[in-house]
Image 1 (spheres, rainbow, N blue to C red):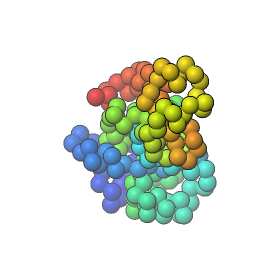
Image 2 (tube, helix red, strand yellow):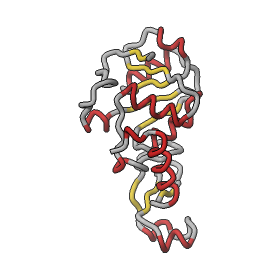
Image 3 (cartoon, rainbow, N blue to C red):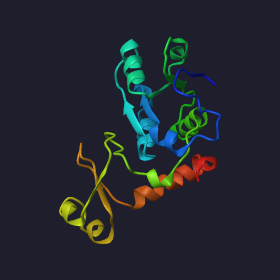
Length: 179
Protein backbone atom coordinates (compact mmCIF):
# COMPACT_ATOMS: atom_id res chain seq x y z
CA UNK A 1 0.00 0.00 0.00
CA UNK A 2 1.29 3.41 -0.91
CA UNK A 3 0.61 5.41 2.25
CA UNK A 4 2.87 8.23 3.32
CA UNK A 5 2.43 9.14 6.95
CA UNK A 6 3.63 12.25 8.70
CA UNK A 7 2.72 13.96 11.96
CA UNK A 8 -0.97 13.13 11.60
CA UNK A 9 -1.38 9.88 13.55
CA UNK A 10 -1.60 6.88 11.25
CA UNK A 11 -4.81 5.05 12.10
CA UNK A 12 -4.92 3.03 8.90
CA UNK A 13 -4.66 -0.30 10.64
CA UNK A 14 -5.92 0.71 14.08
CA UNK A 15 -9.46 -0.53 14.65
CA UNK A 16 -9.62 1.65 17.75
CA UNK A 17 -9.91 4.92 15.83
CA UNK A 18 -12.15 6.99 18.07
CA UNK A 19 -15.36 8.65 17.01
CA UNK A 20 -13.70 12.04 17.59
CA UNK A 21 -10.81 11.10 15.28
CA UNK A 22 -13.33 9.94 12.67
CA UNK A 23 -15.30 13.19 12.92
CA UNK A 24 -12.11 15.23 12.54
CA UNK A 25 -10.93 13.46 9.39
CA UNK A 26 -10.69 15.94 6.55
CA UNK A 27 -9.67 15.16 3.01
CA UNK A 28 -8.51 16.78 -0.18
CA UNK A 29 -8.63 14.95 -3.49
CA UNK A 30 -6.94 15.72 -6.75
CA UNK A 31 -8.66 16.20 -10.09
CA UNK A 32 -8.74 12.44 -10.72
CA UNK A 33 -10.92 11.65 -7.70
CA UNK A 34 -13.99 13.87 -8.04
CA UNK A 35 -16.51 11.06 -7.63
CA UNK A 36 -14.68 9.77 -4.56
CA UNK A 37 -14.77 13.31 -3.10
CA UNK A 38 -18.53 13.37 -3.63
CA UNK A 39 -18.95 10.03 -1.83
CA UNK A 40 -16.81 11.15 1.10
CA UNK A 41 -19.04 14.22 1.41
CA UNK A 42 -22.16 12.02 1.30
CA UNK A 43 -20.60 10.08 4.18
CA UNK A 44 -20.28 13.37 6.08
CA UNK A 45 -16.56 14.05 5.68
CA UNK A 46 -15.17 17.48 4.93
CA UNK A 47 -13.63 16.84 1.51
CA UNK A 48 -12.15 19.51 -0.71
CA UNK A 49 -11.94 18.61 -4.40
CA UNK A 50 -8.98 20.41 -5.93
CA UNK A 51 -8.92 20.89 -9.70
CA UNK A 52 -5.46 22.45 -9.68
CA UNK A 53 -1.99 21.03 -9.98
CA UNK A 54 -0.63 18.86 -7.21
CA UNK A 55 2.39 20.94 -6.37
CA UNK A 56 4.05 22.29 -3.22
CA UNK A 57 1.28 24.84 -2.67
CA UNK A 58 -1.33 22.08 -2.88
CA UNK A 59 0.53 19.97 -0.31
CA UNK A 60 1.31 22.96 1.93
CA UNK A 61 -2.35 23.98 2.02
CA UNK A 62 -3.44 20.40 2.74
CA UNK A 63 -0.99 20.22 5.64
CA UNK A 64 -2.09 23.61 7.03
CA UNK A 65 -5.73 22.54 6.87
CA UNK A 66 -4.98 19.15 8.44
CA UNK A 67 -6.34 17.28 5.42
CA UNK A 68 -5.43 13.79 4.30
CA UNK A 69 -4.37 13.96 0.65
CA UNK A 70 -5.96 11.40 -1.67
CA UNK A 71 -4.43 11.09 -5.12
CA UNK A 72 -4.13 8.70 -8.04
CA UNK A 73 -0.63 10.01 -8.83
CA UNK A 74 1.86 7.40 -7.65
CA UNK A 75 4.80 9.79 -7.88
CA UNK A 76 3.25 11.85 -5.06
CA UNK A 77 4.12 9.11 -2.55
CA UNK A 78 7.79 10.00 -2.96
CA UNK A 79 7.33 13.74 -2.36
CA UNK A 80 8.51 15.31 0.83
CA UNK A 81 5.32 15.98 2.76
CA UNK A 82 4.80 16.36 6.49
CA UNK A 83 1.10 15.47 6.31
CA UNK A 84 -0.72 12.30 5.45
CA UNK A 85 -1.11 11.11 1.88
CA UNK A 86 -2.68 8.01 0.36
CA UNK A 87 -2.24 6.96 -3.24
CA UNK A 88 -5.49 5.46 -4.47
CA UNK A 89 -4.75 2.59 -6.79
CA UNK A 90 -8.28 1.50 -7.73
CA UNK A 91 -9.97 2.84 -10.87
CA UNK A 92 -13.63 2.67 -9.87
CA UNK A 93 -15.24 4.60 -7.03
CA UNK A 94 -16.81 1.49 -5.53
CA UNK A 95 -13.32 0.09 -4.97
CA UNK A 96 -11.74 3.48 -4.20
CA UNK A 97 -14.10 4.03 -1.30
CA UNK A 98 -13.22 0.68 0.27
CA UNK A 99 -9.53 1.41 -0.34
CA UNK A 100 -9.72 4.76 1.46
CA UNK A 101 -11.51 3.10 4.35
CA UNK A 102 -8.74 0.53 4.66
CA UNK A 103 -5.85 2.97 4.25
CA UNK A 104 -7.01 5.64 6.69
CA UNK A 105 -9.11 3.56 9.08
CA UNK A 106 -12.33 5.25 8.02
CA UNK A 107 -15.62 3.87 9.30
CA UNK A 108 -19.11 4.62 8.08
CA UNK A 109 -21.43 6.31 10.55
CA UNK A 110 -24.94 6.28 9.10
CA UNK A 111 -25.91 9.19 11.37
CA UNK A 112 -23.46 11.39 9.43
CA UNK A 113 -24.91 10.49 6.03
CA UNK A 114 -25.94 13.56 4.03
CA UNK A 115 -24.69 16.10 6.58
CA UNK A 116 -22.63 17.89 3.91
CA UNK A 117 -23.52 19.09 0.46
CA UNK A 118 -22.34 16.51 -2.06
CA UNK A 119 -21.71 19.31 -4.57
CA UNK A 120 -19.91 22.04 -2.64
CA UNK A 121 -18.93 20.50 0.73
CA UNK A 122 -20.80 22.97 2.99
CA UNK A 123 -22.44 21.69 6.16
CA UNK A 124 -26.17 21.36 5.54
CA UNK A 125 -28.58 23.31 7.76
CA UNK A 126 -32.01 22.16 8.88
CA UNK A 127 -34.84 24.14 7.31
CA UNK A 128 -38.57 24.06 7.84
CA UNK A 129 -41.08 22.68 5.39
CA UNK A 130 -42.28 26.24 4.75
CA UNK A 131 -38.74 27.30 3.78
CA UNK A 132 -38.70 24.83 0.88
CA UNK A 133 -42.25 25.37 -0.38
CA UNK A 134 -42.20 25.95 -4.14
CA UNK A 135 -38.55 24.89 -4.36
CA UNK A 136 -39.14 21.15 -4.47
CA UNK A 137 -41.76 18.96 -6.15
CA UNK A 138 -45.18 19.05 -4.44
CA UNK A 139 -45.20 15.32 -3.70
CA UNK A 140 -41.86 15.69 -1.88
CA UNK A 141 -43.12 18.73 0.01
CA UNK A 142 -46.16 16.83 1.32
CA UNK A 143 -44.65 13.37 1.83
CA UNK A 144 -41.05 13.94 2.88
CA UNK A 145 -39.00 15.64 5.53
CA UNK A 146 -37.06 16.69 7.42
CA UNK A 147 -35.33 19.01 4.98
CA UNK A 148 -31.79 20.33 4.87
CA UNK A 149 -30.36 23.04 2.67
CA UNK A 150 -26.85 23.92 1.58
CA UNK A 151 -26.04 27.50 2.59
CA UNK A 152 -23.59 27.70 -0.32
CA UNK A 153 -25.34 26.43 -3.43
CA UNK A 154 -28.92 26.25 -2.09
CA UNK A 155 -29.41 22.55 -2.93
CA UNK A 156 -32.15 20.98 -0.81
CA UNK A 157 -31.83 17.50 0.67
CA UNK A 158 -34.45 15.19 2.19
CA UNK A 159 -34.61 11.48 3.06
CA UNK A 160 -35.80 9.62 0.02
CA UNK A 161 -34.76 7.41 -2.85
CA UNK A 162 -31.29 8.98 -3.11
CA UNK A 163 -30.53 8.05 0.51
CA UNK A 164 -31.75 4.49 -0.05
CA UNK A 165 -29.67 4.20 -3.23
CA UNK A 166 -26.61 5.45 -1.34
CA UNK A 167 -27.18 2.89 1.42
CA UNK A 168 -27.63 0.14 -1.17
CA UNK A 169 -24.37 1.17 -2.86
CA UNK A 170 -22.55 1.16 0.49
CA UNK A 171 -23.96 -2.22 1.49
CA UNK A 172 -22.93 -3.71 -1.84
CA UNK A 173 -19.43 -2.24 -2.08
CA UNK A 174 -18.32 -1.65 1.49
CA UNK A 175 -20.31 -4.16 3.59
CA UNK A 176 -17.50 -4.80 6.04
CA UNK A 177 -17.45 -1.09 6.93
CA UNK A 178 -21.13 -0.68 7.76
CA UNK A 179 -22.12 -0.53 11.42
